[in-house]
Amino acid sequence: MLAQLLVSSLTAGAVYALIALGFVLLHNGTGVVHFGYGDQVTFGAYLVLIAQNFVGVPFSAAIMMALLASMALGAAIYAVFMVPLRNASLLARLIATLAIGTALREWLRAFMGPNAWPFPFLLSPAPVEVGGLMLVPANLAIIGVVLVILAGLYLFFEKTLQGKAILAACENRTGASLIGVRVSRVFLVIWVVASLLATVAGILVAPLLTLSPDMGLIAIKGFTAAVLGGFSSLPGAVVGGLLLGVLEALTGAYISTALKDMISYAILIAVILVRPQGLFGGLALKKV
Amino acid sequence: MTGKTLLFAVTGIGLFFALPHMLADFQLFQVCLIAVTALIALGLTVVTGLAGQVSLAQAAFVGIGGYGAAILATRWGVPLWAGIPLSGIVAAMAGFVLGQVTLRVSGHYLALATMAVTAIVQLAFIHMDDITGGAAGMPVPSFEIGGRALTSGGELYYVIVPTTAVLFLIVGNIIRSRFGRAFAATRQSEIAVAAMGVDVLRYKALAFAGSAFLGAVGGGLLAPLASYLDPMQFGIPQSIYYMAIAVVGGLRSPAGAIIGAVVFILIPEFLQAFQSYLGLVFALLLLGFIVLWPNGLSGLIFRRPGARWWGGAAR
Image 1: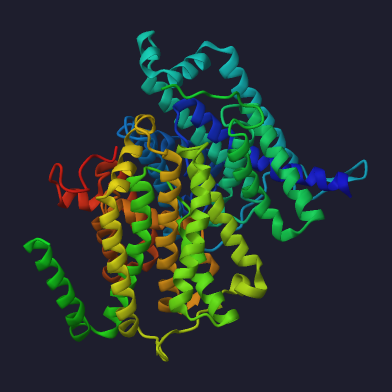
Image 2: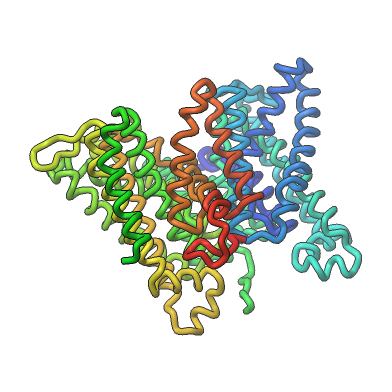
């Protein structure tokens, strides 16, 4: 019972981890905390439906179109909103990302309707029994994708010159441009990649959750995962996500289902209060 | 009292008594809705516009005000005129505690923490079925004063509009006092202000307490006006909606809260044929203003440098 519970909870945890990876990538790469990221996840899943139902292409081609469209969306968000706001206060940028998310969500509500849409699984949702545990291929795929993305991003940032240039550009914009890093292009690439990740997450997550315009509100759990992991650590985001999934499932099973949702918000507040650097992040000192 | 303020006061009071004779009941209902919304947005003017602390907990305070007053009335028979300020005080204490949180965090962590507060409060409304009516919501008892039940917008007008006006005057005066200057200085440089001997933490916590009180009183007055409490009205999207009102109106001045409320309550009237696009219009308004005119409409209207409290750029 407990083993089965843990295996199932890992799926939810992987979903949070996937969203947290996007947050951390954007935060590390551009210094922006994107409060509309969850809505971009939802939007990505809807893009597939739009391509399928309104353009009339088959499912696989629709996924390709959605991925391309989301890259364009990421570039547009950067060029239209983030460039004019690059010197704005944190408050203005924070409200702007909230507004971008709300605009995407309300656009979906206006044009795709407020009701849920069915979304097909990429892999079989039928459980397979392995050693007494019921495993669902579609759910395992999410965990696999999370690990692949984590490995890819981690190697890129730690082992390549490009990745280090990005970290440098984020740390000190002026310094990075002095040594020849094209900061604006670096930020553009990060926005494109993060938007692509959002759509990948949306396509994987939509069949598990209910795909309605409000699906993006789950992003606050992705935030919790990212905060738990330290907000600047990619492996931390994944561990934070999985940990949150397990904690939620345990609370739901052994304490009360009503507390299941509350626990992640409580964890968010508690971590921010007690250990704002997260479980893995280093303590950042603010210099005067 | 200078001649100008006297003129304003006389016009205001005259208008207050003239409006019920000029407007239909539904229009008075809208005036009430604008007043209540402005009051809630005024809370954000205080905490975000003045003290510079982002708060996405406003919908939670509005909910605490509404549910608090309604529960006090149905369970313990406390009349709404007493229950609303009482819930306001409880919310202010909660806000004060929340303000203490800002000792350690600011910026996006504060936004996240206040978001989480809203989510927790909303879940509490949904799961405490026996006192809040759960996901189905609860009806609000009518506002009784001196044995007379005020039910329509035209009757509640005489309670809501004066209350709002008094609270706006109080906040306007606080802004021009020592407190207001300390808030503004905190926003510009916390370190400099602390070096001047201002207890930054206490001021931040007070700003949160004030915004919570205004939000809860607004919520308490909104409850009898709407006559029904639905927990879905107190979630994170609603917090963003109040933020949009404050930003579009202008975060820097109390006038901005009123302008924003007028715009957001009257737009649905002009877009009646496009109800499903309302949310999109509001979101695009917020996005457009934060990028192009971060000082909001009041910043565009009162573009006088050094004018009382609405000077300065929001960036």
